[in-house]
Amino acid sequence: MKPAILENFNSLREENMVAMRSAQEKGVKVVGFYCTYCPREMIMAAGAIPVGLCGTKEAPIAAAERDLPRNLCPLIKSSYGFAITEQCPFFLISDLIIGETTCDGKKKMFELLQNKGIKPVYVMQLPQVPEQSASHRLWYEELQRLKKYLEETLSVEITDDALREAMHVINEETQALQNLFDLNKAKPALISGLDLLKVSWQIGFQADRRSGVKLINSLADEIKEKAAEGYAVGEMSTPRILLTGTPVGVGSEKVITLVEECGGLVVAMENCGGYKTVELRTDESDHTDPLHLLAEKYMKIPCSVMTPNYRRLDLLKRMIHDFQIDGVIDLTWQACHTYNIESYFVAKMVKDELGLPFLQLETDYSQSDLETLRVRIEAFLEMI
Ligand code: SF4
Ligand code: SF4
Image (tube, rainbow, N blue to C red; front, side):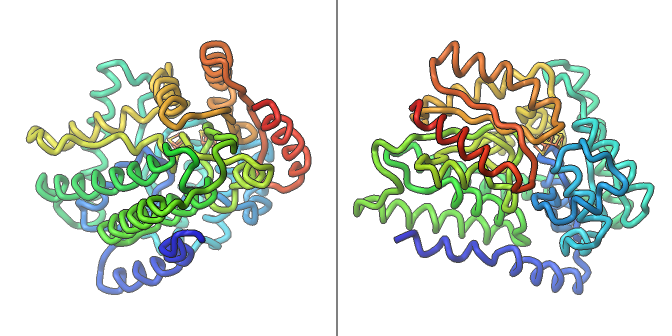
């Protein structure tokens, strides 16, 4: 039987909607953001609640295509569709929105959102050559600019102490998630890919991050206790798959579902919401300018919008080793050029350097290609 605490994650999103509404009635602001590069610590230090708004469902895409080209990443269309159709309660409740100039599609979509004037949309300029000192200077200045904007818009002062406190909470959260993800280094694995996704996606809506940390830690403890009594997910022979590429959430999990229906297990996910950021922490023993620490941390996120993006390959290599991976699936949302092109380097490393099976899947949020994907995934798993 699955760990009982997993049940608590099923309704977390709805419960947190209620918690955010009641906090808002008491004057607390809610700040929506789309991308992992958004420094959540800054929002928390401003006394506001950060909430991720990336669209993971197909439903609002048709409405989005009235303004956006059809040949655009489904994540961008879904996010925009949710915003203009007012179908996402978290968008509706947000007092303001923060975006970043990550990929071309997202940054131009933010222009449309600004033009619609539904909510105030603030866009940070993200430098994309992470190893250059000029990028760090620009990103640091962007954090200063965001701090000023939040202080003025929310009529608050963001103190260094508040930033350090927020950094501590987010460090605890990422550590808790990493500890949970790391349980799957065990063979056989201890948690399915679908459950991992549910946990990491639902926890993103947590209004009170500290109670979220407790919940993740309780789940990890329960899994460890059960494992000591022989509990496992799958067998020693179950193919262990690493999923990398574009972000996945509840609603866009079809590839994970298919892998697990076809007899494999997604034991680790490198993408956003997975391992991409859980090793990144701000150094709490460093008492210099907290904005510098934040700038340093966020510049290290190994997203394909960075060039070159060596950190992703390094992370993947370590994960393949640590999670005893049998095959890698690189998921590309249609029209995501950065992940699509970067797949060349991932394939080269996985196939040529490590000699492991590799499969790139390009798809969208629709269910129309399910059977084609199933056939390709079945054939891939047979190679293992
Ligand atoms: S994949 Fe890159 S652009 Fe997309 S949410 Fe993650 S960090 Fe942001
Ligand atoms: S998946 Fe690719 S195209 Fe879509 S928002 Fe992320 S980086 Fe942009």
